[in-house]
Image (cartoon, rainbow, N blue to C red; front, side, top):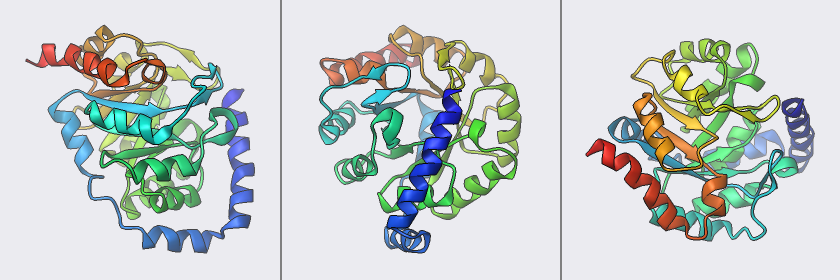
Length: 265
């Protein structure tokens, strides 16, 4: 199963990274980095209008190489110029060709809230995120069994960052709801086999209280789908491959934005 491979690769990576910079030293680096001021603002913003989170992604297990050229700060600047609500940066190296240096470069370039997107399984990774200037951290319920999801959720808040709690199934949602998260993501992609069901987020939205901002992840390839998501009660969406492949990212994002603004008008 792909997800098991991703977690195993992350565990091996953590061993190397902790040998290079000890957990205590990384925690000190995190505390020396000011906590982001915008962390608590995004959920409220998503309740006001349908939001777009644009992703900096070079590759994926399902699509292989997505971008042959990856000027990550230029991409992030284009996203910001287009008025996205947040920017997601992949930092997983083995399957997505990401790196922490990309995250740090983006946070030093833009003022837009930035999500560290990785397979977070350890407090060390949350410390890395803050030390790199991130606003948010992705917590995937499928890879955080039992108390681990609660522990990492609480630690993310303690470090002044916003947890984005990602779920795919009804069972994962039932585990996440007791946390009372401000922001949840429903992945239309099943990380066990990387198949996509666009309607998954619309179905699962009904299981989540309206006071929780919920974004749809994966499977968005055309502007009209944003109208479907909005009609289904979603508060926003995360889009990666479609924007990465766009010849004019700013124009493409504005086209997607106009699709939902017509409904909101």
